[in-house]
Image 1 (tube, each protein chain N blue to C red):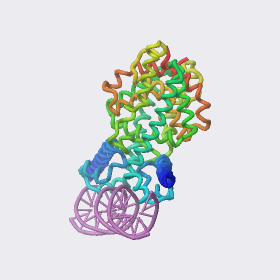
Image 2 (image 1 turned 120 degrees about the vertical axis):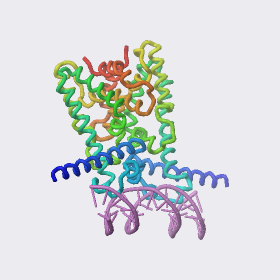
Image 3 (image 1 turned 180 degrees about the vertical axis):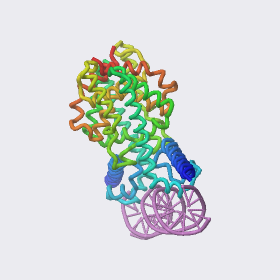
Image 4 (image 1 turned 45 degrees about the vertical axis):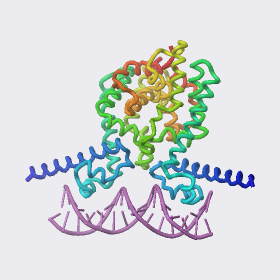
Length: 198
Length: 198
DNA sequence: GTCTATAATACGATAGAC
DNA sequence: GTCTATCGTATTATAGAC
């Protein structure tokens, strides 16, 4: 009896994930507005009714995917923060992680990067107020305090650190760069850190 | 007679511009997919029929706006290229121009930056193959040849130069930065150039 | 060239059987 | 929980008067 419930719950969760995966794939491939629920139904192999049973609608699918991914990113940065003490090392690991995630899960990276919050989820707060972004600012502030990073506006510092790397990620996702991002890691890091270091 | 034709042509061109301006305003405010032709009709004060007389449809409006803006940007960069000889000065002027355009014409900047080519105009070539981008690469290549810029991949160099500044532009457009970008110009330039310079 | 009225369609969402 | 059938609506685009 308990088993049956567990099995049902498992299968229900599996169904949820199937729907989310289908949605993520289609949203990143052709965009949120170019994806209909019929498309998601087809891709997931389920039915419209089943999708509406698990989610309140298309917008909730986008929201769910977005916050899942944000939590994923945040947990990774938090681990980096805990695992390294120096700002230089922490920043390097953040850039390295950004590049590796792009190569391993391009769809995930594409979803967070190209997600137009104001269009799809206009009532959510902007991504720069999110926890990953706040964590980066803390890393930088501690780096300034430790004399590793030149004193400057925190927002400018985070833009300097991640602006170049994020642009490379975008170019890679657009197919402009043939070689994997990890090939560019050391050179990119050199450029980014020169912008910040004392 | 000739006057009448000219007057008609003028008014026709004026109508075109009114439609384009309405479209640009709405596209940047709420996004391409959240803007209907009815919205553009209302905002422009014209009629659906008139819009279809001047443009083949909504997509052509987006395309027209996009290439207009790209040409505008390209001409400005070309002027900078012609007006300055040193790579350092050219790059500085590009960043300055980026910031000033953002403050003077935020809607224009928002349109090029947040325009999702793959979603709205999936059959157009990516922006990185556009002329402004090519011109930046030339500036950098000449800077490397002149010994002003460290030898490195051209794509990486342009990402290093513009990545940080473009992120600041985005943050400014999102309302995160209270002060105008020009207040950040010198500090931003310092960071960007440190990443490139020998 | 500009307009109104309308056609044709695709969409998100719901109802109700199983 | 999953499904099919369907509703109501909003959209792009066209037709045809002026």
